[in-house]
Image 1: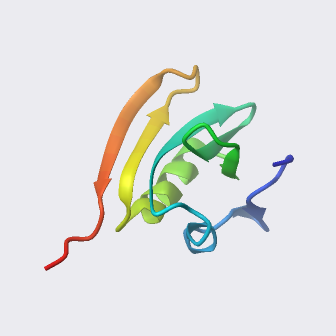
Image 2: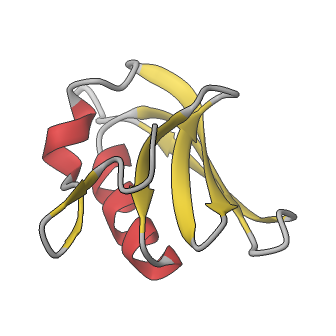
Image 3: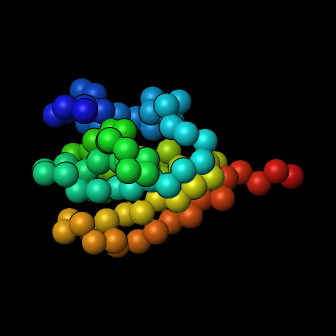
Length: 92
């Protein structure tokens, strides 16, 4: 993805627009990349880019809702800050 990939006017791509392209179950990473943050699936290229980490976290929370997988959140220096597990929707 080139510069500005995943962005819309005035911000980043919305959760609903990228969820259709995401695998059903996988491990995602939120990583710093230059002056922005990338969401990747496993070791793949960036699925989308965000201008700020807080914007990325808000969108990632929406993306992961109801999915099965995990999100590893990195700090600006690349070290792991936190890992979040998402069990998916409960089947009642």
